[in-house]
Length: 492
Image (tube, rainbow, N blue to C red; front, side, top):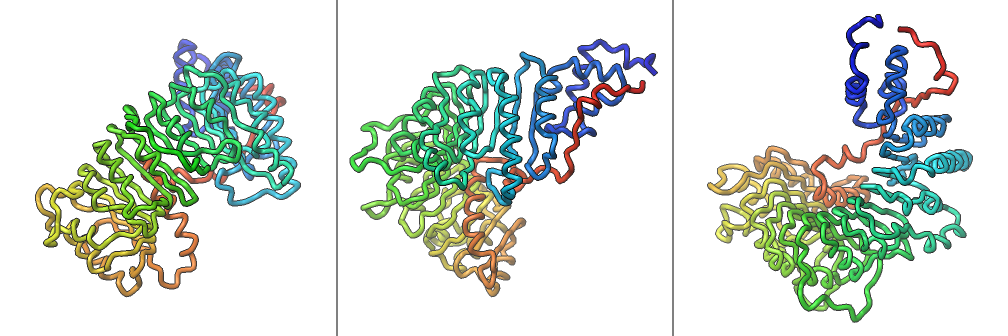
């Protein structure tokens, strides 16, 4: 069998074939490359073990699937990855949106396993290419993000401990990137404290995502303005977590963000985010998301409209949430978005006048208002009449005037007056892909108020269906190779 032509291939060509066998999602399964390649024959095993690039992607599965030998497997992969090849590491034994907690006994075992993996990983930090880690927050200092000096992408998510003494020490556990780096392009930090000053030094960043930062690394509008000024920044997800100084004012001249294409700002407390919106303009912006309740002494709130007018961007997706009954001049805002394709509005009042202006058969129709709109999602909204909504949907689904796009997808989730009785009226509007969730007697309603809003807002950023992004790892037992099996005689 070893006389077969495949055994006469040059080693570099065989390595290239092996690399193409790697699964999209790295794993430790014996039926998947690279482990499978070591169990075919002696020649392939020798070739696979001599190719460090086959072993440079390490993805640790969920704690329920990891098995007792997962730390052994991590050490084995690191040993076979050599000493110089760039590493892609994903250690996320915990779900960042934790749904199921381990028992106290399981937690002790998991902590010991995590500590062992972090120790094994320590000598290799300087050759990390991409890193993703979801850890109890107390592990953050040991991970050594500051030593991943050659990393292109870093994602760190901290999970709070039940130990109150440990939580009291969290503000001192700031994730610190250290001095400027030339290669760091993408940074995401969630659920832990961070040194924002060290982040602002990373001038090569193209994407930042800062969510749910803990005390000691709070993100206020003043700090957000500094981060948005990074010269190469193309996308930013910023979760404001700290009140600003009462006398804070926007810059006298708007800061023009010449590279920014995606901006998503959220805040969980009443705040006047006018300082941020009045301080910048983003002419290349294609997607914008805002989630939070603005506090304003004036009616109506003008900052969003003014930001859109100053940016003059070809905005394609707009997602607004939690504005409640604040008058945000929605109609004037939409007039600034003639290229808009995807509109998502949640927990916000939608005046009936907006629907009239969008309805092609209405006397108040504005022909230049959202002519390219194809996807609409409204969740937990009020302020409009059901009849106005149905007339708008009909006018954008059948016999659409020239120059106006048809509505392809519409989702209406738990909105006022959308009931079992009014449901047939909406289903008869002719929308090809219509999703309707009504309030009547639905026990899931309180939970869905939050979940649907969050997913609709995140749809602003990601092309893929968010349900796919949140899928768990495959439900299969993770099996490993022991050092004893490594020496088994292979049959040719």
